Length: 299
Image (tube, rainbow, N blue to C red):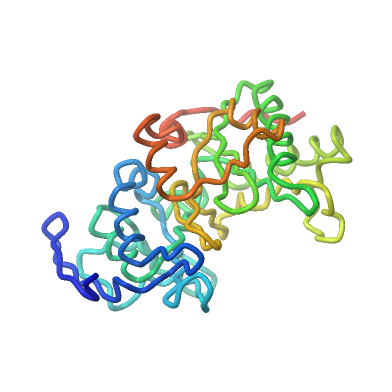
């Protein structure tokens, strides 16, 4: 395998390096394979990245080495990589934005394995387009318990005429997204998400916890509502995850969540499985970017 390559993507010249480097030692998955995955998944991934400020999570020495987050888009970026200036206390941050395939390949070449996006677009830092619930199990709870909580969350949202869409985190839990794509602020969505988490905790106190303290999570599922904040990012659907093997945050059908709740599936997908699922099913998370829903008031 060549160590370096010069390629052209959509008319943009790119120099790729260290292509033979193994980024996932347990499986031998290389940097070249990571770039190839992102090229193949791009048709469904790019719409989810469009106009969203991006925090990079880079693994230059692979998943077993040191990693770092990078909010400020690197100064050595190509001139054609777009940035979004987001005001922050005492100044601003110029975040990278993935607008095209060439941007995605450039980031993959930086070993930016994980893609973490904000819930808002452009510099509209007070206008989330969705609500996200992150379901995080405390051992010995696992994916089955997360699925059970996800189903209760779905039913709760359905009772308010809100459609929701599940995906794996690519790690140990699940995430449920509620598309809005209508006027709303984090001042609306964060209290709403918190209220739903507290409701689920009251309904299922042996299964659900809404507080962030680690010491009370044992054997329960933490419904993390705090991600609904202008300063927080969430792992993007179809992003690789820095696990032992190259797993991916993968969209699910609710029928699969029901099977997971019954313990009939592990719901952990590696890159090739996710690509095959997209070939068969298309983008199950597509409506998250387009479906318009109005946030109801909690009584």
